[in-house]
Length: 474
Image 1 (tube, rainbow, N blue to C red):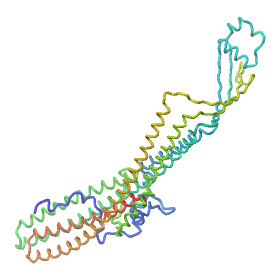
Image 2 (image 1 turned 120 degrees about the horizontal axis):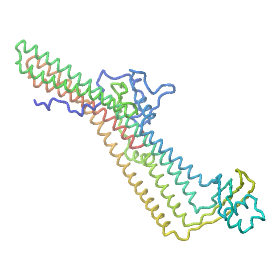
Image 3 (image 1 turned 60 degrees about the horizontal axis):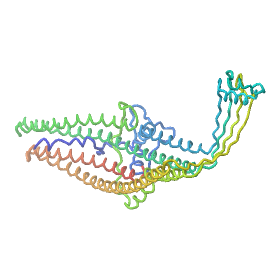
């Protein structure tokens, strides 16, 4: 028997165990099925803190609640949504009047400015017509206070379509944030089950070590009685050493998995965390595939986001085309001028209505329209591609779940058969009817069967969550 045949692969350090006799009470795993079966993100009951007391078991509900509060991906998505909503306010502000207040001071000997400022200050007299004064005026101070108002009346559709584009962008950011929330829940579920899995694999490894030690004692007793040779005892000790190595790796995996769970929750990696030893496994078959694909095409947040981005791109085409039309606006201002201090010794007002049309801009507007149309086509194609991707993801997740359920059923049968086989071989070995090699092989087969069951159980949980994520339910 080679070493490869008796050493459990490292991948089994990442599996979840639900061995008989180790399941936690239902209250300690409440809400897990709600996430794994597509019921949406769980929420703690009113008044229950998300953080459990030190030393208490962290439930999946609590882990998700902590992540939704602290996860950095979700915070970044919140910032993106807030920025998109602010752009809507910026776009809408284009319809509102623009009001400005000005206060300027000027000291000048420029003849034109001196002449005009004297008029504005209402201090102009006959003496100021002196040619010597007009040509060489002394320095003049002027404090000007001004209130201006600008109102757009018509912009060729640029403002209206710009607002609608910004609103579509905000809706896209909102849907994108919801998709990020779902991905965070999926990430927490993955990390949480990974931590539970590592804890349970450690229990599997420790059980295997107990069995290996019992076999060493059995062989030692039989060797002392002269019933077996010393080589049998040495082989049993080698097997015990291999199992001890498995336990060491399992302990390391427990530490790493807890750090990964803390990262998913947005906490310091060294934060103490305790997880249960079992989770309920949803054994129900997946729903009808075509119905799930239709549901995903309707409710996937990232697909809604892509469609809103496409809508925004189409609106931006109209914004660019608006440059071909004139812009009409109204402006007015009131100003006061005074020589010695800010004030209104001389005041005036003006009201202007203006239309501006760009007759030629070097084909810049046409280039902008082409650019906007190309981006709209790009958004359309990306949306269609995402629709195909969503349908493919649902199909893949559906088949993965069906396969995971079948693997779980086969693994459970294998555990039962391996347990019965080991019991028979142990009895035969004690009677001297078989060899140590067969005993160790039976022990190895049981350990592998248990880790297969553990792996299959977690695969079912993650496959169910992957299907819910693909449909947009998580």
